[in-house]
Length: 560
Image (cartoon, rainbow, N blue to C red; front, side, top):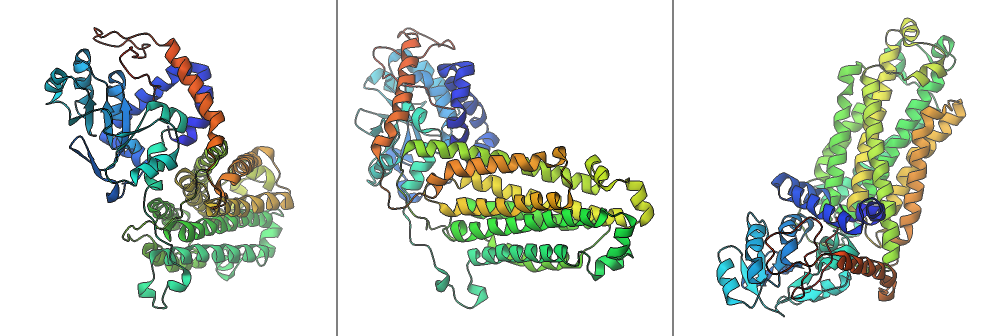
């Protein structure tokens, strides 16, 4: 339930389950996952949340906090909130107001906690009963409570080292579960990013981002060279030596065969250029600015791509140029992923219109879906290349069978298998970069994210469409995934462009929040009206009760 699923899908979830039930279901699911160490790590790292800077540490009611940012909830929500909020970036949960009837509920909520829990109450008996079960107690006015989704307001409040910021559940309903991470990032002090002229001539002193940039440029050059070879001689000397055949011999054996080899290799070349564009963007826009997630995107993508060199163990064909490129780029890759001291060097850009962000989140979801689809496609292509080599539409285009091709040359099918499996491996590597860059890099004003994805999409999709049309391999079933990928990518980037490419000088427009915030407020009021009253003598809550009493502060349910 990151923001890129919460906002685009919340309407559909509300239509199926109802607004209140969908929120409670999301909260309980997050609590169930977050209560387990592995689940908490999955949410925290999978959604790109990072450790806050030390300057955001502090205390509340004498309780030390790693980050002075948390949430204030009524007792009835405490059990799920205490388990759901830590992976999202919250540093404390305040439960209150707490009366004598709520003591057992708070005890159960605080058991097994991984986050400081403080209780807001003025009742000495309640304090005595809960003293051994919670971390501390607060009173009205001890924390700065925010009721609106503005990240700027919360980050500004955190500038005071003595201020603890607590959000009402309605804030997360309006902003989404990523609100904590966005506030922490906005409150993180930054420094100017280094320039290329600041890098010395001694390679031993080059920062990691320079090496990552070289890998990106190297992949781009390698892809362009591969495209040049494919559009020119097609076969190099080592190809002819391995096959024992010339281009003329291949054409004589099957007049579609040369075109088939070109179509495999040009799509591979386009994918290599795509990877180069993504790595170049990650190096200059992310790693250079010490974005921790940018290094991880680069690392994980390379960790998928480089081992595919060993596909030759299954195909039996070792391509010298492919091997040479990998041996040159791999040491640079290792230098590019080494850890460096983390000093934030990114730019701070105002929040801007909330509706603009909501549209961008829909675009983000489409790009992530595209990336996941590309990864699945790459995995399937790799498996096909390492096993059957051809799919039915390939053999229909060639007008022959795999057995007939093996009769032409016993090395012909392994030769094709090498190209096909290698393309699948490159596609998986690019897909990892696209998916994680889209999941972790979506921020207002980060134009490099938009252009990296746009160039990568153009380099990957356009050659594939053009080469298939040129050789008249236009089977709709074969090309349907390509057309779908183009549609999803184009739509996603168009929706996100105003947000990602926003000017740094644009000031925040608070009025832009009114439409969506008012809608959320109306939804919250509906939830409140439909909720059942919980009396002081209540020992437990039914699934549909909304824990509102005259003495308690009304609140909406945190989002999924």
